[in-house]
Length: 201
Image: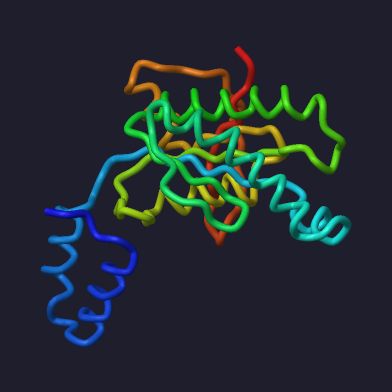
């Protein structure tokens, strides 16, 4: 059975709106069709508003393009770049350990490139990683840990930080992996998110 796209999903939801009685059966079918256990990596870039106002949108888009060129090869070693959204790069992986390795590779590559760039040309990446059972489409993904990864990458992480959700850190241990980490908590969307900053070994 083929995996639906976002457009396919929206057509299914239109049918659900028109015929609410199909909701339960449709939900079961959708989770069977495209429910997956996945690690989700969300990379966001710091400085969008300031840099765009100072230098223009094309300058910032050049930084974003630089970020894509750094991030995509690291992600695609063991995962896939699912989509590019605003100034985000979103990758999915089977294993949290692979997502973490990709994140560390991205940060290392960015640091090396930033060393020869002017401050407002640099890739100042913030990365959040979650893990959970999600709806994975051909071109998008949905689920609680997707939202958590976005919150961590976009709103909570500072430049050059990698943050793991509690679920991601637990899964990393199940996989037999570990990392230095610093426990933190933040309020996002009215919910307390326990998360962990990855620290050097």
